[in-house]
Length: 189
Image 1 (cartoon, rainbow, N blue to C red):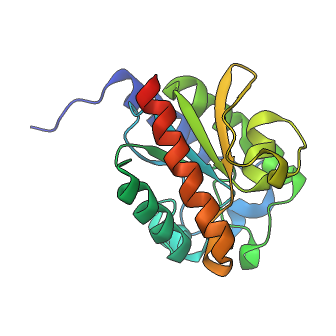
Image 2: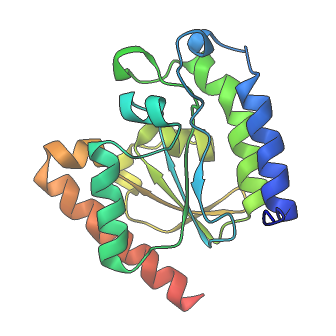
């Protein structure tokens, strides 16, 4: 007999179905799969990236490509194996370009509902797009990265996107430091 879904899982499934039927921007036309979210919905840590890439579009799972494997390794190496991971935009932009404002605006209500439902203790935002979408603020990422910020009743740790960390050794070191500070925050909670 199949395991019964928790209320949180059931509500996430409802939101996911809405995303799968969404036609608010043109990205739905070329997607293979909606990339909604993955992981433990009861985790204290929520990780939010920008948008799915090619491998994510094919599997429907966020952060499974090269950058995702790096991120998951860094989280695991730090001892953070329990998390829920998603993106701002749930469908892949063409050629992995940065999502357009209208694409972000179409998906942010879904993301906000995910955050409200999951109630994470802390959110790790990866890159400018994720930070701006979650906070509504327009800071330079280099000015806020690695800091534990309280914005709009959310605790946020902004960091570099792992795809940038793949190309930049200092960004990888910073992302690693930021994940460690996240762990310290969670342990002190």
